[in-house]
Image (cartoon, rainbow, N blue to C red):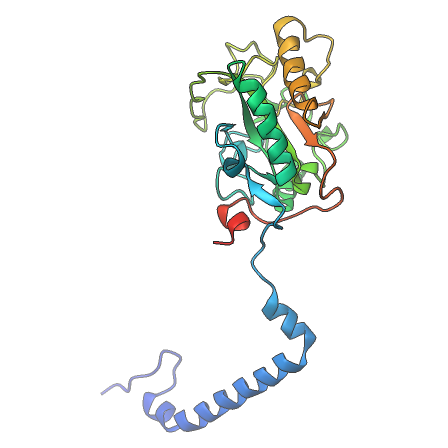
Length: 286
């Protein structure tokens, strides 16, 4: 009859005879661990590290103004990387409270005129920025080039300022957004593998968006996305100025290279780059 073992080659009978000694050893080891934990600051620090959570100054935009449309792109594969980005666990806009309240005031102005704000991205964890950096260094991955950077060599994304190792979004008061004429029908979903069209193509040809025509799509790596590019005229230019002036009246400053990019001033955290994930738990603790 074959003798049964515990799965590591030790006969059960022999292992059973050693059980009291093993238990005594385990108890002694546990006692030693408790002593080390009590005496070692390093051990205490490791034990005390909490799950990353937003400071109390951060809120979910939906709790301040649920009427603002949220089309959070980086939790989807429809972005310049072509896959969901690290750190985005929910399609949720998180901002510092002053920035969220300023957006609410801008939204009230727009609603009276039959328009609404729509956010594409808000607070961005540092781990997401790190994901962008890794992607930018992989020159072989150009799956989304035809839409987002058709006229830019990927090797120049850092040099030309499209990708950086730090982002103002990680400080919590910067967001990417646009304006939608109400009632706005939802943007149709993106299907990976579909034919890509340059982000600067005419509105009827590029990926559909329910927003006003701003001359390019969101996250277009092209000089045509510069807010005041002189080649953008007529209704497209007027729409950009409409967005810019509406937000400027509430304390937002536009990044000249991106018509969609605004930062609330003064920032509560002007030099802190956070890395808590984009999730309800980050702002509620639940």
